[in-house]
Length: 376
Image (cartoon, rainbow, N blue to C red; front, side, top):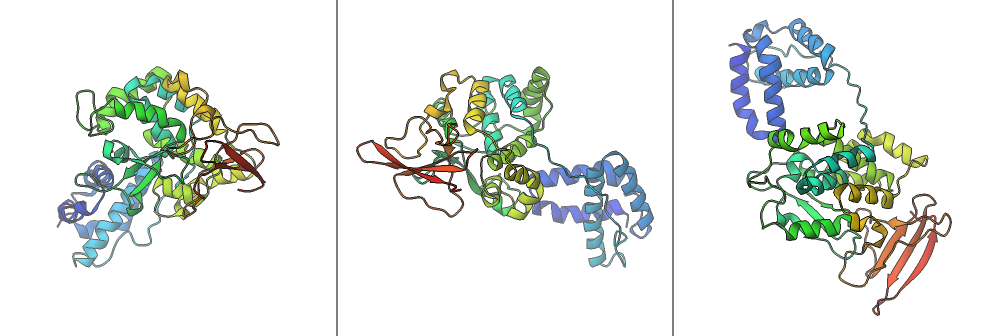
């Protein structure tokens, strides 16, 4: 039996177990890199030297492709051993190419330039991706029914529910989650939802679900050419992670927002961002919000401090309080995972001085505040 014959037999049993994006990616690696080079060989002719030669050839150009190719070969040949077709796995003890994993986040200026270059219809979609970290497949399968109103304990008014349903597969079990939408995107989101019929949250102008090819050809590539910025959709996910980290979110919260399999995965990807936060590299959320809103064309909302911060239908504090130490506008502190705040309370924090402010909302619409220095 040739490797091609075995691969097709093995793949037929395996592909239904994979998420859609993983299935497409592995099929492309197999058909473009593995089968043309090794498919004609008998299974017994697949030696460690042959596989190492293919690995080294690919690694010289793209180490990431070589890493994935060897992973597919190892899995399929291990299954061949279990099926009794070969005695041992030729990839056993074969080292994988070393990958230099250095995740870099785009700057706020690059993200804003891309948002501004996109058609007005899709600017909110890019802004949401840049602040929630939703994967492409997660975001463009959302429906209006997946936009949930959050309870009063959250400073964010809406959340986007990512869940499995017929025709929608998720990368990991933890990808099923509710991702909060930044409070300063509340008004644009409400206006947008009010302007579209129930159904897909973002769709093509002529109707129908947005796919990656259509998005690249019609929206993303023209926007990159117009702005002079080269970014992948996944770079928005890295920007969102860095944004949450730089504004004080802990690793558990970031892992929950991104839908990572574990907080350890989040820490391994973004340890440099957490270290930067610890030494004082922090963002002012009001400034980030103002830049993104301006790029979206939301000129009437260029001062995010004037937006309601509380997610409940009752009078809220208008205007962000100022820090008693440095005088800068404080941002809303999101609750940590599993944390519950008292009803009728909001919390603000200064990213520079670590001073926190607890605001108590009174029934008559007034409020009182208690300063809590050093509370994080």
